[in-house]
Image (spheres, rainbow, N blue to C red):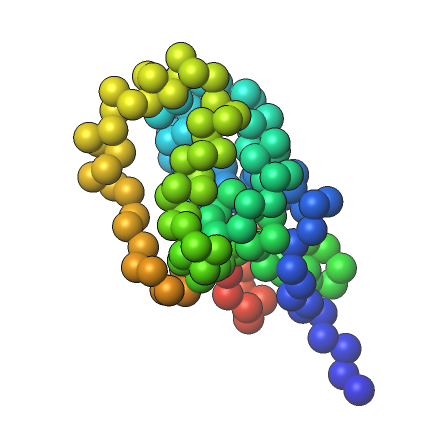
Length: 152
């Protein structure tokens, strides 16, 4: 039997630090601009702490939920992660779930600052179709690219 160096598994709570890196990398999209920091006017370090708390809630149906991630390990090392879920499967749209989490974890004054930017946010926000399979945030670490598997 041939050894397969590539293993996929569901993310677990222990993966939250890597998932934060995945979210930050995806939000920056190769730039130095971290959208959550800009929207909520909070430093990246504070947003990372908030993301850890939100991910630990494990509220399924949106990209800030650890159990909605698939992890890729190559030769026993974490190589990447990707988020995926069925939109609205929990009975609520992912934007409502995510918004509720933000309302709970983001300081009120920062939520007010974000509300002032809603017209811009709505222009770039994804409106997912109910029942659609969403494959959204992902990262393959540079040292694992070109190994014959694909994560965004």
